[in-house]
Image (cartoon, rainbow, N blue to C red; front, side, top):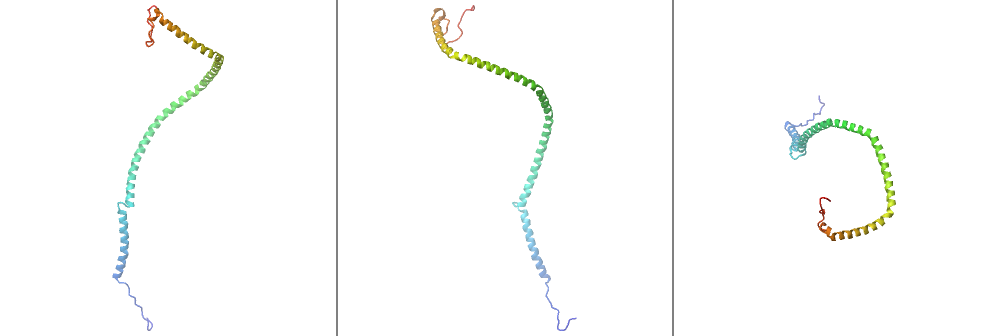
Length: 179
């Protein structure tokens, strides 16, 4: 019951057409955003398409890299199989060297002491002979000149003249089979 002079206020509510328009407007904006997002995703030069292409290329490269890694592992495994015998041979060689090394060092020590002794003796001999060297060199020059004179004289003597070749034809002097 309403008291006297009271009334129920009437407000007009939106009709179905208006509600449909509002709903349509809000859906249109969402659809436009969805359309923009789909266009962005489908752009062949866009980030997403480029990223997908890069992922495809990366996965192909990873497959090739895996094949190379597998081949490398097989090669390494084969190489490791060959390293074992080499290491055994190396260990044997090192053992042999280890056993012979003291003997070689002793011999080396003896050789060095002999070398020192010989060097000292050569030094003494050189010191002793050094004062005579200038005199010997001076005498050698005179001896060479005298020898040159003797050879020239021999070349002029009739028994030797035909057996000594001229200076430009040096060689073996012909002689009898008795000589």
